[in-house]
Image (cartoon, rainbow, N blue to C red; front, side, top):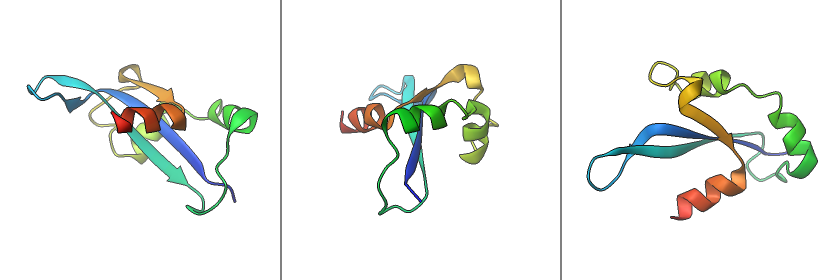
Length: 84
């Protein structure tokens, strides 16, 4: 099974150096960590089936955030945001 990363940007999940709420990211990896990663059109097709509500529930954030607070992002976006 290929590795699939589902990444989500959540408003007010983080704080800046002054304690002001700001967006942060969450990523869930499904499948074999050492396997080839699902990318391109295959990933886009998979992503169309994902509901933000389900990702929030999976990460136990559904009690604190709503889908309106979130947006799905690509693994590349996630990696870039984590490097900053």
